[in-house]
Length: 207
Image 1 (cartoon, rainbow, N blue to C red):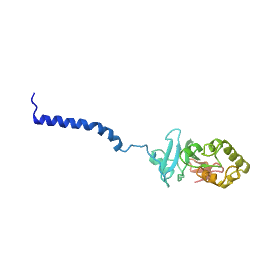
Image 2: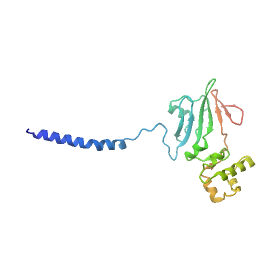
Image 3: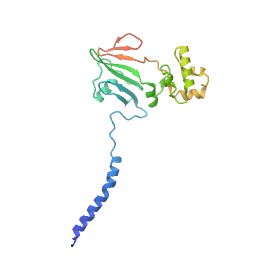
Image 4: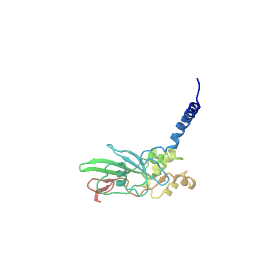
């Protein structure tokens, strides 16, 4: 069979195309940016916020400083609680709950295990024995000693009070500062659909 010049060129071109397909298929995924879920990328300046909604969106989201609860709900496409808006803070948990007039939210702190996994410090006045022993350099004995001192004094007002415990000197104290802090704010706040704000240790007030 006689091959013409244009047929030979066609066969060569087809061979080149077929030879290029494997490397193109291999490289394409790395050239196209992956589509991450909304607000799922953390960074040095992002805030980690946990949403808990039994009937809707739940998970940990990373937001920019200055973002409010209402704006986060808008971005996620979920109903925002009525009444008072509030700024989100690092390590905050927002728990949605139905009430007779609509939806309420309870503002809490994330669990110690979640905070530590995200690289966030835990409140030494709220952390239990099991929470404390998850901290690098704190074993069972030291965790028990910290809890015992807290029960004796009522609460810690300064992290430096930990140096009263045998085995915690300045060098150890500096390492613990990366994992512990003292939060003077109310741990739990309820915002109901009527716009009332209630802390875990106080009466409701109108927002």
